[in-house]
Image 1: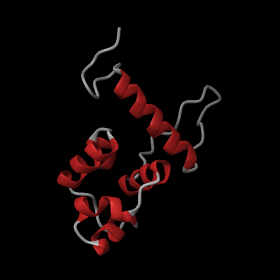
Image 2 (image 1 turned 30 degrees about the vertical axis):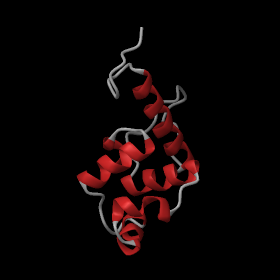
Image 3 (image 1 turned 180 degrees about the vertical axis):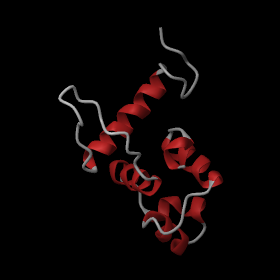
Length: 104
């Protein structure tokens, strides 16, 4: 019995997002803190999550121009020099079909 509400704990979409985030953390060098496989509670920075989603989906800066308006602003966000606004996080979430929390 899965809950159909998007992002609710226990729902398929929540499990999918956790799997994606777990995969992103593993690819970025996070290692299990115990033999049982529990991970350190370090959060993946939003710009790294954006980079990960872009790499895995084959998207380019041109695909995201409608969200960031200018290439310079996009570059600053991707390099971690500028934070992702809440509005941009919502648009990114809709674009990649995940929750906005991953980008905030």
